[in-house]
Image (cartoon, rainbow, N blue to C red; front, side, top):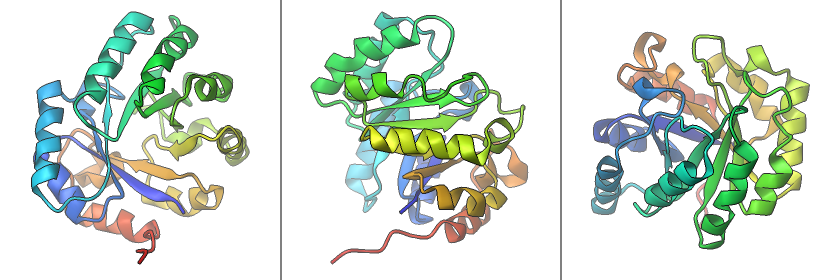
Length: 234
């Protein structure tokens, strides 16, 4: 079943999103790029907030729009994972050495880091080309997103068939799957039949579609209602 990933930019938004039923809380600074990172001390405070509250949703954290330099990427992923989050998200860009970065992260994955690669549909011609490398390196998952938030949403850059192939290939390699990229509420019934593990939202959850603005509880409620909730076991 597809879960709802909600990107949050502050501790206040984290609490709001948790109360609003987000299935995974994604720590991201939308004013600092496609995958703008929270400062490490902010991530640590988020973890402390979760420990002191009834929040049960897993936390993921982005590491920023880093150049594809293996040493820089590996260091930032290790520092972020050390904060105690459940997943670390790293954007892979075509420029530089993305394959080298993936290979360099394999030791972190072997030590237990749950790393999710974010591939950008508006930058990669073949978004699935790195998936076998990700699986071999021990990554936990792969998402398709968009880098240029002003260039239209995910469905402007990839057809349903292309998305279905990406998801099928990733699933076949044992990777968690996710779709994001300026998704709207109207995109949900189109994407749910593709059965990604996660649909990620930010823009659609903010007033007037301003991804740099504050999370809007009413907008979150509408998106939450459109993504069927996980049944509670027990």
